[in-house]
Length: 98
Image (cartoon, rainbow, N blue to C red; front, side, top):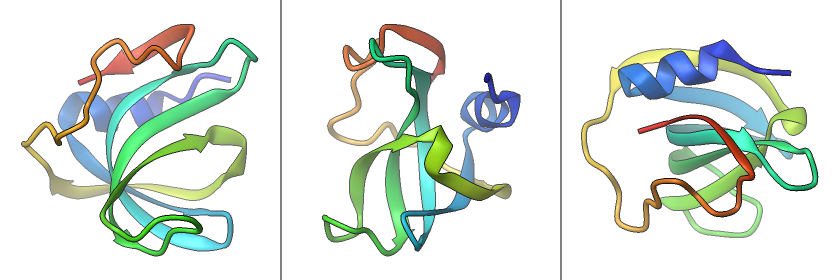
């Protein structure tokens, strides 16, 4: 269940938009991988939309099974946000990362 669209967005630093837990979100994608439990997840910095638990902007770990209406946006981002962790330890296997 590997999503090449997400890796393309990460490699090109494109913003992503999607629906997640009944909220529309726009994020800067940083790391895409699989957890020890086998969940496919995206670590991203949310810059627009609403969030269930936190105020935006904020970091989020998004389960791919809960993402719908995924779109790669033409807008890019260039800054590595404070709190970004290369080789994110929450993931047992990383498919792609900034």
